[in-house]
Length: 479
Image 1 (spheres, rainbow, N blue to C red):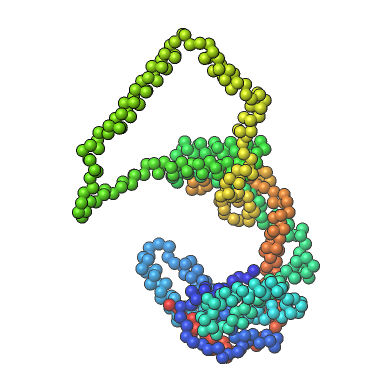
Image 2 (cartoon, rainbow, N blue to C red):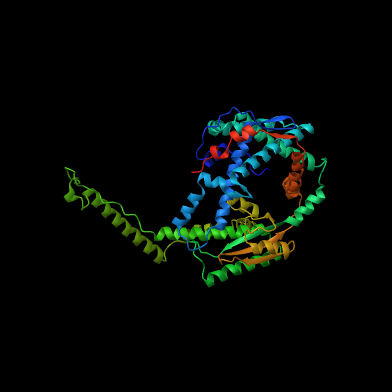
């Protein structure tokens, strides 16, 4: 819900390169409405401000970096010079030195912390046992990883836990104020109207204009895929389910890839077995009676002769049977009866039903079960998004109506997107799922303004001794 003030101990370790000891004797970071704010809370927010300052300075440097004509070595030299401690803290950030900006941000954060604590108490709110247990488990886990480091900064476990719980209280206060029954509750009709203004629902099939090996298709191959997509459009307009069509393409594409992989496996050079190395052996393995091994034994010879004779006799008998006209009729009769029985075993109706059952196509649900890796692209998209492409999203919002289907080609020529606009209000499930986040999007700015008013109404007294003692330039040294 917040902008990331509570960061993990692991992140803190990665951010800060070195640290001089600062002690933990200062008790407060300041006082708001007569309530002391622990020094550990101030130090933690000062650390967060350090991280934010680094990020902002990096963005400024990237924006101002020459686009061409400077060597990587020159750019690296500039970066190293700019990130030395003294120069870093003297850099200008929003009209202040980085050092003053960090102190100001940390002070603002502890004042917000105090305002949330006070208002949470004023509204007689409380965190649930589940919330408290979850917070405790999370913080204990993170503390076991980086608690020693944070303690060295002067941040106690109690301060670390208190900051995490403060974020939970901030979120609960928001719900209390803006959800149904709150002082500034927003009706569902307004939230839905916001949803319709900012979001649309779409589904699409991504036709890859590549072969199974990932190579771009030539004109004939592209034309074939385009014809497939246009056929899908016709079938969709004739009432076929879009998900079934998407699944059909998924199965087709899987087959193309599998075929390419099989072909590659066949054409790959076969692995030859390494020759047996007899070097070093002090004996040679020779079959016993090697001279006789190539000729059959007497017993084997007899068997072969008998087999040959039997085969010749059988062939003569077969020839006599086929050519003889003296075979009695009784001999042929059983064959005729057996043939008749075989032909009339099943009734025509039963045979037809059996054939229909055998050839029945699997349902979409059955195919989905057979292909668990298939994922539908049916989702809500925010205005201004660029996935799968900016042109697609703009068309969904500005040109297409619910139920419309259109084909787009990506700018890089590697994809065709078959897009259908769905009804985001078709059922209430999406709204109910997204209601809380939609409400926050609507009222986040108003809530921040309200918190600022609580902060401005505070009777706040900074602890100058702590501000002096916890000097960012001494605590967080640039590498």
